[in-house]
Length: 109
Image (cartoon, rainbow, N blue to C red; front, side, top):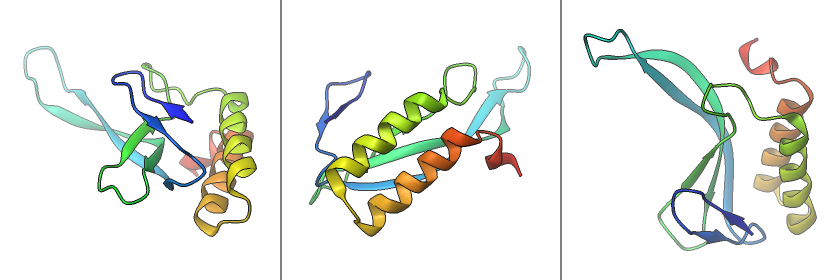
């Protein structure tokens, strides 16, 4: 089960649709103009309850933009692998999480 911090949503990782990707992150260009400028992309994990249209996105980075510790990503990957088995979509997510956990700078290469 996975819970969000902004709203209480419990998602069953054993049956939900899963995907891993990168989301664009923007920052204000300066204090005088509220214009957003690209600041790059950060990793994210998305979950959609089976049969639902709503995706819930969990950023895999903190408020400073730093990727979360590899140990936390590894725990998430292990949890998914333990409840999903060799499911193709889940296997891709697990592989991506473990790769990022091993080398967080690989996304920038």
